[in-house]
Length: 357
Ligand code: SAH
Image (cartoon, rainbow, N blue to C red; front, side, top):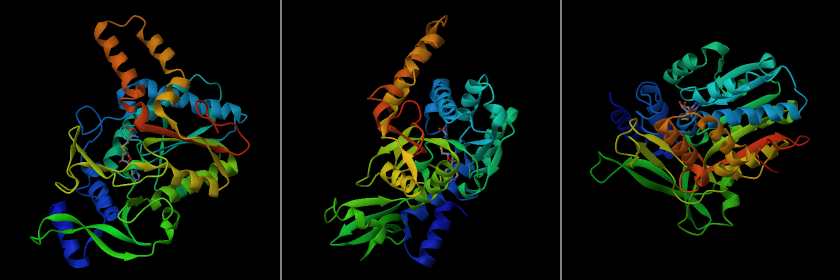
């Protein structure tokens, strides 16, 4: 049975489904989910991510985490962790760049959290030299100092959408159109939503807000380790401080698509609401940095000097590729402004390199 047919059956039985349930099914349905059934990321896939654009991204993030480890007195043993490692490229670049740091990799245990078996297989290949261990959930993160990266992970987490009506909220759901067959968006009845009470002040009737409960749960687990044992997290994604409006989008073959058109065949994401992540960290007694654009962050970490070093001796074609990659990662018209970085760190430690309190 196709995913579309199984979604239709479910809606027929249970009624319209939340956007979060729809996203979960489309992305991670064991048989037909987008991440479970295809190799999504990369030039031949549907979208390309920063580590797939250039090795410089992983190298600089790896060294920023090493600096945090040094600043905190070289704690060991510690966990080096990644959420949603994709093809394993980011972690492979981080590990290559940090190999020469005395004591770092000896004190490290590498742990990965990845829901899609297909992606795990790619990660096992890319990271074969480092004996990674996959954890089923963030709850299984070891109780040790935690140095963690997550790039384009939070944007794939399921969000619910609510449209404001008076002081209540109507949930936006996926149900059937007038023909009783095609999938379409609709609104449920208005109800109170305690989790959205902080949004009554900055929204008006008819405004749509998104709420990602999983983002808080994931952040709490990370922040508890960092506050209790030390460490740092670098969370990179597109989004902003407090989201407003519908940001659900589908990408297929590097182009925007209709999120309902072909369930399981397109990547579905929403813009990350970093305020929710920061609040969840604070609630665990963990400090967070100012939200910083990816372009500024990478420039502060020295991406231009790194590009110049890599450029020495390159022929015209690879040199042009390197210049394009540097521009894509940092330029405000490319990923430089849209993507943001939030750092988590212990109250008693300085923020990770490239970020400020
Ligand atoms: N960080 C990688 C990949 C980003 S794509 C990069 O920058 O290239 C999102 C990744 O998160 C994929 O590996 C996907 O399979 C994984 N993923 C998505 N939702 C997840 C979830 N709920 N739990 C664990 N992994 C998830």
